[in-house]
Image (cartoon, rainbow, N blue to C red; front, side, top):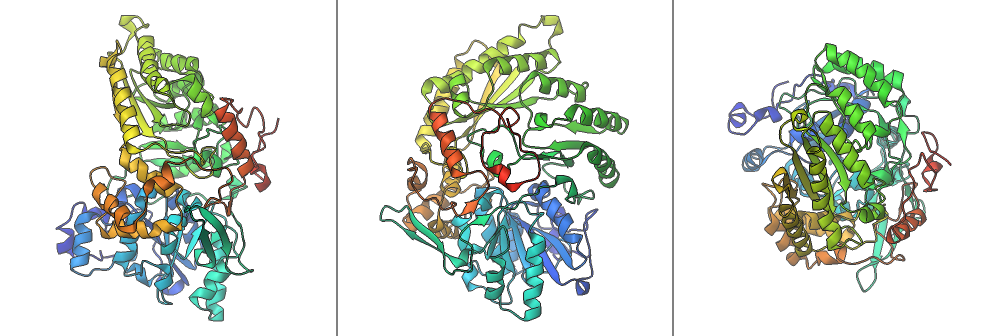
Length: 618
């Protein structure tokens, strides 16, 4: 397939390989033999989008249907964006190199709130009206899915539909509905009405919101009786029956995560009170060990990658991990393939696992204690003691590691300055544990990097009612922690980094935002905001001006404690985990009481109502 972009354009831009397509394992079909064209967009660069497992899973599944051709779309970088606007070149799909506007569907993977302006860039460059209400019969159906779709309201005006839940389930029914409507000659609006009846599908145009005088949501209701009041998320109940991309597309330009990915389980048993993924992906479901062995062999044959990563929210909780690793070590050593195990807990079991897979190359270990004091770890239900952390780090040092990265959060509910200082003290004690090893047995100098993000309350968590710190509060806390780290006796062994405070504020605004924010996103985009998740390109002034232009107070969404009676913009979505359970967890957090993990005791969260999978009971 010849590139859609003229060669002279490709020669004028950075990384032209981002846009040429023709990658290994990309799917090509005769468009005359399909009845649905689906453009799957990731609103970020090609390198970031090609690292997303969810896109690869749905790309593979859609293309298994001979009547569907699913192609990929990514956000053009600034250099190509400028040329496309100047020379009126429409945005195209990577496989056919045809304009996106010609497709039946344009789907977006919404993984991060700060990619919303890139959604508008893709619509804009495609020649598709930004507002769903302005689209005609000739425009694609625009649908959004992913973790951000669990509160779709801040971008509701730009989407015809949202998919709530795991994409492997209801897209089949959505496509059947689309085909039936086309056969009947139904209009765009009539199809959207029919789609609203498909499980997991939310059609925002058929709902209306009203507000109280104080700006909080008063009501959120369907505009007609034949539209469901509640949208129930879709869940894969039989993990092994679902198709998996054993021939993933291999990019020519190096992706951010340039490796094979094997999803070993979905969901999490831990119940960290700040973690949205831990709740929305319940219940835990694991993949069969024997089926994974066969999958690994195919992935190796079909990709040529020199690394395989085991994907899970908590890899060490996969109960057949030792057996899986034994198999992987045997097959990967013969082929010089590295094994990557992200999302490990800092405990003796995890360190033993790491020793098995990295007995030669001792790269840095990354763990997430999240809080420095035991008090705060109990509040957030981390269920990790200081003894666990120190012993885990010490075992790693004995095993030959000398670099440890630790992730924490600042601004957590109930946090005090003493809790923050405990982060520095914990790092000090970890450094001390390294120097307990005899000098002749150490692997050089120890390096401990503490990184802090700023707490953002997310929907469907126990902290969705909590207030969020203001920018100046975050910066004060970061400065205090930096000073405390510098005062430690082993400060030369420690370094500290923290996230952008204003970016965190924006994330908080959109995480719990409502319909009034669509105007803010559009205004910021027109002010020049684009690639907001990139530090070097984040345009803070464009956003600050947008708040002024729209008359929106960001602190209404962030810096206030929510009433337990307040109606949330996402309350119409049923994720299985009940609001009553989340309230119980909120109260337990205030009392510094922990909740056991799901293997130890069922906490009655509600996720079992979805059936299938694994749901532990006492």
